[in-house]
Length: 363
Image: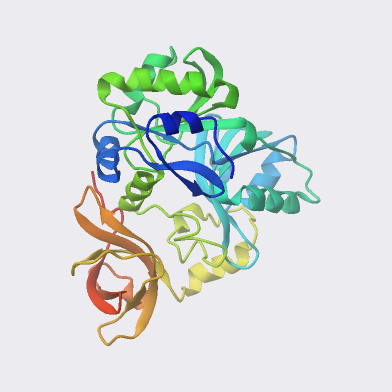
């Protein structure tokens, strides 16, 4: 199992450690509900150093990133970040990721921990005949996500560069907590606002201590992976391996908004995905709330009123902010409309649920 630079710190703070995506990570500290509400109402800090960082550079950098990304990086300028995915050549998704645009000859791709090796191999395969320069910096890069409505206010204490009013999905390279060239971006996976901070492993402990000290007056707490999952699910954000994978298309997953069929964007498998958009799909990813009492979990069947199988749950939980059970699932298109009644099979019982628009949590 791989570890992050914060392993001992997590253990000293009472983190319950588990294996996640090949890493030894804290699943919770004080408890899921209290950690969840801390992020929604104040601020919390997540160790997300397990995520992958791949640099694409050189005269052919733009060509490669535009080819592998479903979104249109032509619209990006320096200081901007974009959410996108790698379509595979079979109609599914290799991974979803962030693109940081430094220049037309320099991009940073931030990918999921479980897919680092797969993404690296995919990029190298797609790079044949293009010739961009690729560098996998995942093992030398640490990352903290400081999330919540008070996050930027607290982090502003650690840099002279103005960061409190940074627009969503932008980044700056700043001196932070006395460390030069720290990358701070207004991105995250919670819907609660805040930032993600990238820096070398060597500066990790210094930066972590500074972040905790700066956030102390606002009630900062360390947050585990369990609350990260309930926070993202309340926002209806996809989790790779649950809601999207090698077999799900961006159109089925409701990711048409990051799939741009524009001139100059000839991404992998574009023609087939465009055809799907025009002709429709055989299943759609939906959000639902439970009406009957019960918690939906991944792979639970979804049935109609007659008991016919119409889909499958991909993610589910008891949502701490909503005090109700919610989930995401792929269902036949005729059951995807908001307000439609569906049933989730929980331990052999068909429990009533209703399709709702995402995000579940409106804030």
